[in-house]
Structures are given as C-alpha cells and as structure tokens.
Image (cartoon, rainbow, N blue to C red; front, side, top):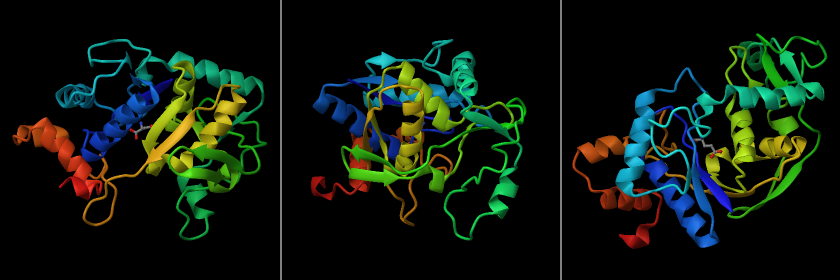
Length: 275
Ligand code: GLU
C-alpha cells in the first residue's frame, strides 16, 4: 500500500501540516503503507524554490522521513516534482482529447461568477463552451463531468455522496496560461505513483468525487480515502499558508523544540486530554 505527503509550494509549512504529517505517517504505520513524498508545484505563479527547501528542512527536523519519492530540494529533475513533468500531464490530456472528453473554454472567471446564484461556495460551470469546438491551446481546458452522484466510502467519515456536475460542473484541467490544475495533476500523479491510500484534510473532501471521475475515466484503480480534521485558528478559520499562519520555520527559529511543535499541533487539533 502507498500513501503520500504532497505539499503544495505556496508557502511555509504550519501546524496544520504537522497534524497532517502525524496522520499520514501514523495511518501508514497502522495500515502497513509506505509514504511517498511529492512536491505539488503545478501553480508556477506561486511556487518558490525557498518553500521547497524549507519543507524538506522542516520534515527532517521533525523526523518525518518518506519511504519513497523526493527527499531533497536539490533532486532535479524529479518525477516527484510536478513542474518537472509537463510532458506527462500533456500525454494524459491528449488521451482524453482523443476520446472527446475535454473541451476548450473561453469564459472568464468573472463571467462564470456573474451567472451564479448568490452565496454559492464554489463556482459551478454551466457548460457554455462545451459544444463550441474551441482549441485547447490558449483556452481553459475543461473535463466533461459525468451525470449523477458518486458514492464513496471514506475510512474516517463513512459513506459520502457528491455530484460534481452540480458542485462545480465541467471542471478545469489546465488554465488558459497552460498551468495544470490541482485536480488534474494530483490524479495523474496518484496514478503514476501507484498511490492507493489518500490521507488528507477534510478541506479537500469536496474534491474527491471529481477526482474519482478522473480515475475511472482514465481506467485507473480508485484509491481509498481518509479525510482527517483540521486545525482552526481563534476566529474559526482553518490554518493556511495563504493566511500566513505561523510557520514551523519561524517557531524553530524562536527556539521551540520539535517535540513542542508536535505537541502544539495536537493540542490545537483538540487532543486536549494529552495536556
Ligand atoms: N497539495 C495539496 C495541499 O498541499 C494536497 C493535495 C492532496 O492531498 O490531494 O493541500
């Protein structure tokens, strides 16, 4: 069994990641899985090399050692770093294009947002461009989502039902600037890295059915899923790199020991009986 730790290169790791690593390495031990590490830097506009070095330093310092995949920022090129593999994603996209399962879309985010009912959490694309025959190059590339509900069993949360067509509609695999999206790059990688156990935060739960549709369309086995709880800040927001939550790098610089950082992540996650 293979699971993975797949941080995005959009900032420094924070306490939420420490909790995540405890779940990944902990569940791997419980289920006899190996942990693979890959760097999700498909968003080239936000990825920065210093984030990658900081991720490996933090993992080393906390003692999270992957069994497989990339282990250091100087491993270049690597099949476990998304920005090193555009040809692979391109080849998967071509296979979908040959089957007529993707199309080019010229709608802007603003146009799509304007057609949404007030208060919608996620933009749902209505398929305006689905029959226009626009080229993929220079346009957003969208996947023709399947009708109906996808039902899956989450190892932590039990039975889940999601209908991607109503949640997000035909979601994008590549943006108009040629950048691969998280949904697409993540599934392509889980397939080629033979990941069969996906452990990740509940904040990504909503993405799972659309990813399952991609696995099924690409005739790849669907992994098992385990979505774990998150750490929230005092205002109830989940910790995030974008919100500039305190980084582990700065906690370390402030003199905290690795064990104290791990303890804090558990306390903030609500494991209060360890206090
Ligand atoms: N790269 C994603 C993140 O850092 C994780 C993706 C996943 O586990 O599917 O949030």
